[in-house]
Image (tube, one colour):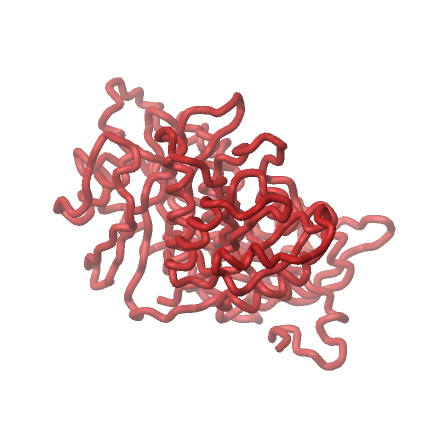
Length: 454
């Protein structure tokens, strides 16, 4: 198998130095909470960013504080995971505040990770001169002077990031090796399912959330295929700081998602329709990985109404309407219900993802789809779709559709094309990527529409 890994960049630093503001500025949307109160961001938030045609995951971690209680300890644990799993660590400090022990400890921890580390000095607009001699004492050689509020130095910082992170890698594994991971909140049964799959007590099973600290992995053989299963640390969801605020730690699980061909999103049958589960499904979709929705602990349901399964399936389909292609399965690690079916689904999804469709067949499909339902126009501009090709080297099924006025295509029409393509060729369990490209732009100056620019 060939697996795709997108680099991970983590922003760490003391509270109130501007990490969330930088995160929002880079990804272009206000996803993290920005407030004057120190310690507002208690989550690790992440989103894909792009600069100079280079994609990377940007992670906004919680600020460093003294571990006065278990909650503050989990914050430092997030930063530890960031230094462990990230490809590049951005240590952020406040230009107005002198270096203190927290800055030194954090910098030391980042440097000990043997990962590339960059120092970011924020709020330089609030100091009279740009001298940062005292910041050099933290020991980080590479640094950038920025002002998030004034948007100064951001382009230089992004240029520095893309030169230090590895390019998106397509790692070729054993031809028959397939990797799938168990993703989910704590206590949904990941380690128990992991043990059941391996038929031995490989992982520690405990009722205490957060027992699985590292990614446990093991290999099994099924239908002559080499499968590797990853058991990730649970995504933390502790008590609320204030109403409406939820926090979780996801960096290590994100690393496992990037390593996988297929992800199993586990959900406890006694606690469904949780917003965090939707967030995880969105992460898996954005990573371009296969996805299976797995309901665990089905044996714990005492009164099984004959229509209960259909009712749950209907509710989950409404909750996860953004991944209608993901199969749903009810399991029990205690009774072994549908455990073998998980293997069958994983193999089926991988086979779907490897499907290659010839260009003539695709263009015949496109002509029929457009004739059956032509795209509507906008502002007297009418989109025209000319031809379609499949990207051969993409690990996620991806298609380029060339035409004119494609920017006027309504999102509902793009959804129609994806649904129609799935009806024709399947691809169950995997996201699809449809790229709409202006034909005249692609061919300008003799450029090939199918090959990336060097």
